[in-house]
Image (cartoon, rainbow, N blue to C red):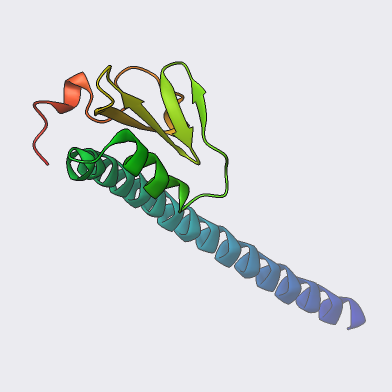
Amino acid sequence: MKSKVAVIVLGVLLAASTLLWSFQIMDAGVTITYMGQEAYDLRETQKQLMASLKELADNNTKQEILEAASRHSQVQAFEKEGYTWVGWIGFRFDAQDRLESICPVSSGGEEGSCYPGVEDADRVP
């Protein structure tokens, strides 16, 4: 009789454990899905803001643009490979100190990842 009770108790514990693991796996799947959507939303927001920033800053001087960016970052501005990096944003200016393009730090200044890029010229939002 004791062995039947032990088998029943172990069976119930096994079923409960299986249900718990199943719930945790489903919860992890939902969490990963939401994280993926959030990452996508942030990338698209970044693209839109970077492209908009170029248009908004077109009439400002290099000094005004860098001062505005510096107000929102504790990182000291520095020059590297043709870009002035202020925090997480790289600004490229032409010979007349007009804003030419803007890059997020995640791009590393790679061609085509800055705004406006060659492929962005024909892009319709």
